[in-house]
Each structure stands twice: as structure tokens, then as C-alpha cells.
Image 1 (tube, one colour):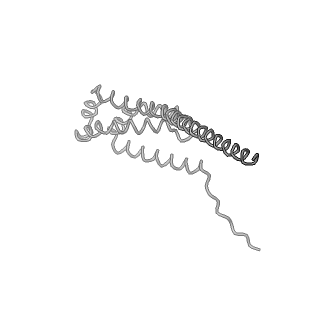
Image 2: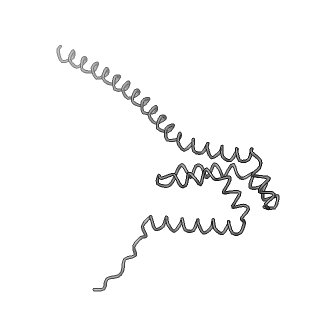
Image 3: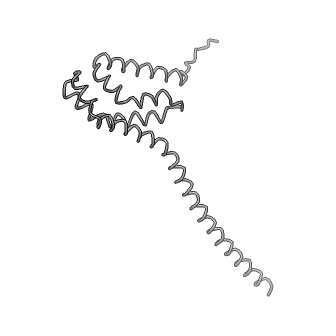
Length: 161
């Protein structure tokens, strides 16, 4: 009897590490190819990078919200630096504007707030809907109970004659 080797699926941790490795490689390539862009992103996305280090939840949901909100707010600044040639002077111009840094970091703060408040809002909404449903079901049960009593009363009066 010949036994064939069964292909085994890679554990999720191995796939996750491979993805992390590829992301690191891509980040390194961008840093080497466009160092000014990498420096600009490092400064603009500093709160998101700190969140990536501190978020211990599986999937890093809070850090992901900070990264997405920060990247969305950083796009105008990145475009401005790109159009100016990605030189040291354009990098200084973009980073010396307090409105740019304030906007991007405020967007990251809004992403953090959304990540923290969204589960609470969903829980409150579900509890509210559950309470409404319970009230409706109790009212329906009371109505059916009254109807049942009426049927019992009718059957007693009909049986007693």
C-alpha cells in the first residue's frame, strides 16, 4: 500500500508573517526609491505608526483606522510635495505648514475616535432594537393571552349550558 503525502495547509500565522514580510519589502523599496516621500509619510503618519506598535488586538483594528484616516488626510500634502519635485525644499515647505500636520494628525485622532466609538454605537443600537422588539413581543403576548382568555370564557359558557 502506498501512502501519498497529504498537502498540509499553512497555518494562518505563517501566511500573516509572509504578508508582513512583503509589506516590509515594499515599504523598504519605497524608502530607497523615494526617500523624501518616505520621510514625509513617516512624519505625517507618526500617530498611525505609534498605534501600530501599541495596538495588541488581533488584526490591529484601531491602528488600521488611524492609518486609513491619516493616509486620506495626507493625500493633499503628498500631492503638493510630489508636484514640487519631492526635494528637500518641498518637504520643508509641506512640513512647515502647521495646518498640514494638524489636519493629518487630527484625521488620525478622528480615526481613533471612530474605532473606539463604533463598537459602543453598534452595541447601543442593537440594545435599543432588542428593547423595542421585546416590547412588541410582550404586547403581542398580552394580546394573545387576552384572546385566549376570551376563547376559554366562551368555551366554558358554551359547555355550561
